[in-house]
Amino acid sequence: MPFTPELLDLLDAARYDPHAQRAYDGLSGSFRWTDEFPDAFLLEANRQDNWSFRDLLAYRASLTRGRPDVRLQPIWYQVQRACPNWPGFRFERHAKQLAELLDAENERFRAEVEALPD
Image (cartoon, rainbow, N blue to C red; front, side, top):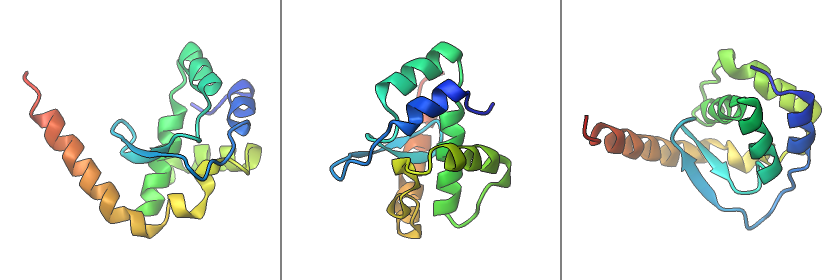
């Protein structure tokens, strides 16, 4: 599902913070920085039941790994056109140097999920 105009407007409000913190998002298999999705965006995405931001993050992870997932490209390009200054497009956030760290976090997350009781 693509982003609605309302979501794009809210995402366009995101501003780069050089002190943003990185965390692993297990549902997208990607890193996510604290400056990428304003609270108003997340609230509206929840209200709309639109979780496309996970596809956006997953596509970025595929770029980090050097294997772009063409199925997820449309959401990336939609946001690039509408929100070209979104902090998530910064090169250092999808640089290949993050691939090893990303894979390690993915393995850790998988192990935690597999260890959950049935």
